[in-house]
Length: 553
Image (tube, rainbow, N blue to C red; front, side, top):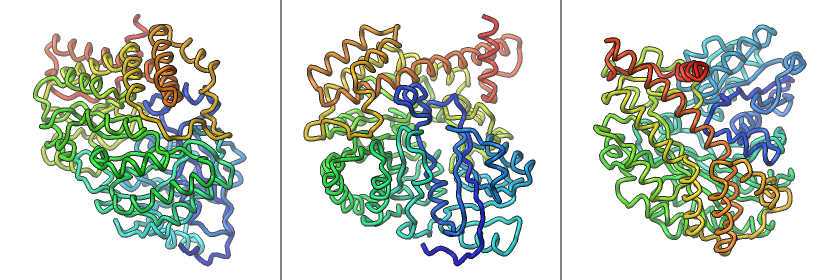
């Protein structure tokens, strides 16, 4: 994309808002072990930075990894911020802070696009895909305008003209991995998902030379290690992807495999042996899959029919045999759950041997089919689109609608799943079974020099990790030794997943304590003749309820 002919200079401070610390995804202990500060870098902001005129001076502050200082604000002519729903609270605080310092604020990203009214206090709102509207915004700033709302046309942006992100603005040592994006959009129609509302159902992919140029830029800056393709469904445009992957494999081989890749994709990737082979050759090592529920009725109800056309556990195992381990998302609280789903979901997780499972409660996101259906039925809570400090992911603040099944039963289901899945012995057992299936043959045996994950591979680090797992130390050691003997090529991934458990185990126990407090509250209300237990209750006060319960002993 050609830059506007702006001769004006402008000092732009880009600020990435904080996520809540209490989130499934922050992997704080894993970061600590390798000296990182946060898992992921702010790809959206550095992509935005690349669309701005070269005469504009840009600085980046990530509030998840560093402090925003008075000197930062004093330097800036304008502040750009925004992000996802889980960053809404901090974004709104940032707007107030910047205004207190007399600085105009620009907001953008998925949450402002979905809920622009929430960000009315911002001076500028840049909504939708930035490439489609940034020229108008720059022209307005150059003309001296001090406010405005700029909305990009939906689903029409040509991503083949998206510039290379400003990777040079990142402090690589702050992150576990760096993100890139190959495509936008997803062909499926899952009722609860906002991706198709934001990016459409026709996936748009970058060209192979364009994508390799992005990776080359990252390589030339000296980064080595884990790179995440942040696409919401990497295989949405399989035809284009199958052209790209062989070129990616050749690029990697010519540079001695500087990067190892992860991504998100739909489970139907397991149906395509050629695709699995190409991803294997392109050095993908893990994939996140949205499984949501083992119940076919629920999958049909929520319009995730693509998951009903196969044996889900066998599909996961096929991905393991292609040398990639699976992390997965599951959701509790669908209308179609007429009886308990807990044992069926936990049994499926065990059968599939998926160690890392993001099990959450259903949340009606702004601007989704689910939200519109619930609104028509009068079931949405009045404050459904107002984030709270506790809303960091679907584990800690959800169910923002009146449920059909008694809320107490849904919470008990959720608690039972977490207790079973994140029991340390169960987790170690899934690691052991994963290590028996994960075929890493034909892959580079050693991580590249400069990859911070090399620190985890040392025996000293293994002792440190397992030493912090007193509740199942012997079983984790057994898993480590068995993998070392039977599948040494998979060992570093098993150790990394053990490190993840240092966060996931305590996090699950914290969420369980929160649920226990809420269930107790519901039972007291029912015993006192208060609101029926079946009535959905706002879930955002769970952290406060849990804290009260803990303080009371």
